[in-house]
Amino acid sequence: MRIGEVARCAGVSTRALRYYEEQGLISAKRDHNGYRVYDSDTVLLVRDIARLLHTGLSSEDVLQFVHCLGKGNSEPPKDCVALIRTFSERLGALDERIAALTDVRQRLAAETDRLAKVLEG
Image 1 (cartoon, one colour):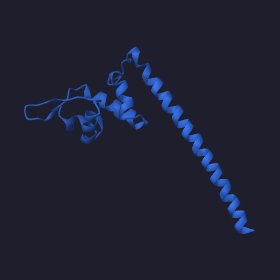
Image 2: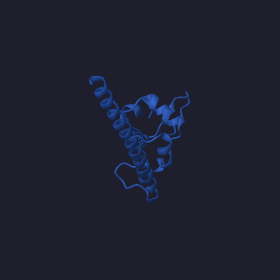
Image 3: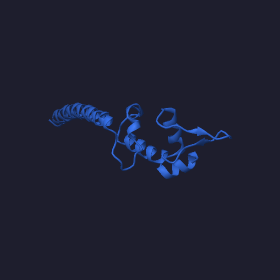
Image 4: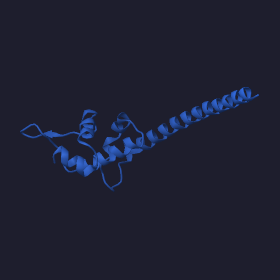
């Protein structure tokens, strides 16, 4: 399959495919004319990669367990526990950021209320 066909079938841009290749997430062979040629399994892999990147994981995160992806409905290998660990770590980091932002918001709201009372009074 050529890059345009993989992109169309996977629902991503050709630019995204080139990025995935640069990051080591997918690989392509080269045709005699230099065009990228992918095997048909790449479509499932690209769909999984795009979905995980959309959830907020980085390409470095995905690279750690790319061997677990692209399997369709089959069960991932047992050594893919790292996927759950990575998700949990990212969730924990988000929870910390949300808590910090909530604290900043509360302080800003309190200061806004204080200043409004001073200016009204």
